[in-house]
Structure formats: structure tokens, C-alpha cells
Length: 234
Ligand code: ADP
Ligand code: ADP
Image 1 (cartoon, protein in one colour):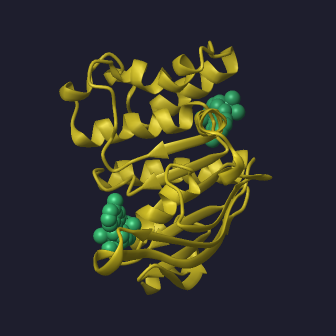
Image 2 (tube, rainbow, N blue to C red):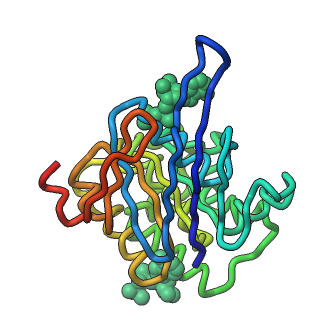
């Protein structure tokens, strides 16, 4: 497992009068095996925080830690390898490769790493695609699938290499209730049983209730925190 932490992170977009302070002195950690939901109004800085925690974007000030490493000290190629091996992403826009079928999209992290999956890894990927209801869709390309199916392929790809950290931006936004529930159960099991850490942006209190804790952002600041189990209060 790998913990992630940001300390005193601020992020400013633009200059002068047009500048936006998207994050204002935020400190937050995601422990090993912890499932954190991030909620807050549109424009409150949720996506910016996730991108910075994942090393996809740089803060204007503050430190970003992945495990024992402050990522500002890493070169681009070291950061790329760290991201590819240890971090999984589920974006709102699915970011699937249109020319590859579902299976090839799911296996992309292995192929980029020139790593042939072991039999244990293959068993995990089969279990994963099965529980996501993708078994009959593996030879379909993205344009031959519904939005919900594409989202499940993106989730399978993010989990396939068993990354220590998973960042998910509205992962259930395009899914029906039943599939949402299966995806959320899969994510919470990944944390509880395998020590993976997840940070998930969501608008949905039901989705947030699967998390261990919920962090609320407003105007670029953390304004509240509660246990996931108390999500019915939202
Ligand atoms: P959320 O994910 O909560 O909707 P974001 O992190 O996307 O919030 O955005 C926070 C603020 O930063 C918003 O005011 C948004 O308009 C602004 N913002 C986000 N990305 C950019 C960017 N690339 N350039 C300029 N402003 C941005
Ligand atoms: P079963 O409960 O039938 O064993 P699972 O889906 O729980 O099926 O697991 C299948 C395989 O994948 C097992 O080898 C298990 O160790 C592994 N596995 C399941 N979930 C994860 C996960 N989140 N991270 C890493 N490995 C996992």
C-alpha cells in the first residue's frame, strides 16, 4: 500500500484580475486501505485536488507526497513510472483508446509496461471483468458500447494492475443503480481486503456512503469531514 498526502497546497489558475484560487491551503492525507469520498459544489476544487494528489498537475505552492516521496523532487520520467505502476485513474471522460477493444483497453497498463500478466493477475482480471459484467463485451470497441459499459471498462483498467492508489472522478456518474452498487462494493472491497487507497469525487450521497470518510470542499478549502456511514445526513 501507499499513502498519499498533500500539505498546505494552493493552486492558482491564471494571473492578475482573472486569477482563480482553485485550492487555498489544503492539507489532506489518504491512508493505506482508506476509501475517501470528496464532495462539494461545482467549482469548489475537487478535480484540481485529485489531479494534484495524483501527480497529474502541479500545485502553485505546497507539497505532494506519494508514500515517502515528495513528487516535486521527481523528474518527469520517474513520476511517469510511479504513476503507471502504482496509481489507477478513473476519469469522467473515459479516456479509452477508440481503436482498441475492451480487453486491450483493460490490459493497456500491462502493455505499456511490457509486463505479461501472471496467472494470479489473470485470475484477478477475469474476476474483475466478471463482476463488472463485461465478460461478453471484451471484444467490443468503445463506440460499440454504451456509456455505462465504457465506464466499467475504464474502472477495470484502473484496477487491473492492482495499483496502491486509485483516483476516481464521478466513477458511477454514467451507471445504473445496480451497476453503481457493484462498482462501489468492488472499490470498498479493494480497500478493505487489499489495502488499496481510494479517493473518489462524487455528487451522490449514496456513493459517498460506501467510503470510510467524506471530505467536503467549498471555495478551495476543506470545510467539513464526516464518516461515510453518516452520509444519509447529506
Ligand atoms: P470541481 O471539480 O469541484 O468542480 P475544479 O477543480 O474543476 O472544481 O475547479 C475549481 C476552480 O478552478 C473553478 O473556479 C474552475 O473554474 C477553476 N479551474 C479549474 N481548472 C482550470 C483551468 N485549467 N484553468 C483555469 N481555471 C480552472
Ligand atoms: P473470489 O472471492 O472468488 O476469490 P475475488 O474476485 O475476490 O474472487 O478474487 C479473485 C482473485 O483476485 C484473487 O486472487 C484475489 O486475491 C484477487 N483480488 C481480488 N480483489 C483484489 C483487489 N482489489 N486487489 C488485488 N487483488 C484482488
